[in-house]
Image 1 (cartoon, rainbow, N blue to C red):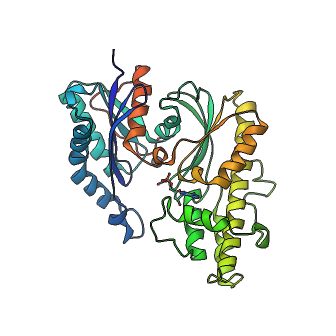
Image 2: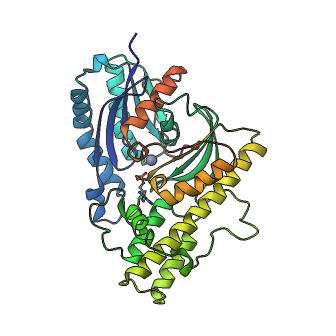
Image 3: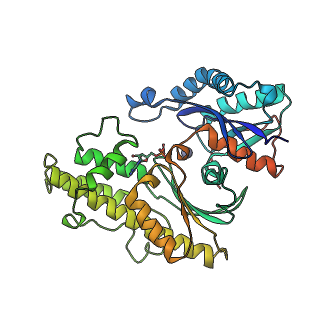
Length: 354
Ligand code: KG4
Ligand code: ZN
């Protein structure tokens, strides 16, 4: 028998995305319409604009995905759709589309937790390599957290950011330093531009405060980036560096990157300890996922930690770490295998703890 094929839909934030994925981890087709331009001029995501755009695009995104795969709805075995967490008006659009498609074609419907989908992505086509339970670090523009994935539908959230995400911190610091090619078409955005600049820098020249270093916060597995961000902003105000001098820019980029990577490493170490002691769980590997996981300095500090614990570190390709339809389809496959289906009148969940 051929492997199952699942259509996945994602509309929880500012991407209207669909994909068809097979049970053996092949992507038959994917389509992703970004809304970045729509929200850029407002300086952030405008919920009703986002919903409006999803409403406009979702039929075309589904149609295009089926065409790319040369399939009809009859050839799809199940429909998976993001149920939450996310912007209510946006979730509703994808959910209505997914429910209707599934109901009309009498296909199983699977409501997917967006974060679980991020966390399960690393297993797509690699279930032997990424076995439960594992520690997952989601480090992106939208998420900064650590969790133990015990199984499908069974997770323990360990730490999350108290303020900004790590991706936003990289982006804001890159802007503060005024990196020259920041608006150029650098894949990975400002964070990747900062990483390039940091290669030429000396991190020791601008020592930065380590976040959550007080006795009350040092053992807390959460994350915090607002302190380093305001430190850089203050340095800029006080003209402690010259943003037109390439060496200053590089040294500052290196210092920030080193501090952020070290902070992640410390908190990942606490997460491992928490898994072992409080959760009584021996994880089989560490997964680092999200745009920031493509940063080499971040990878090196996490792989040093993994080595100390004799664990493999697995980083899925960056393009699978962003919000997309593939991760929803894959999470749908994992849930389908365990019989975790939903009725056609399933509702969205705006705030949905893991
Ligand atoms: O996972 P992702 O692509 O999407 C969202 O979260 O939406 O993460 C994007 C974030 C951005 O903040 C970007 O600057 C950051 O990941 N990023 C990086 C690198 N590549 C992307 N940060 C540091 N170093 C990189 N090489
Ligand atoms: Zn996401």
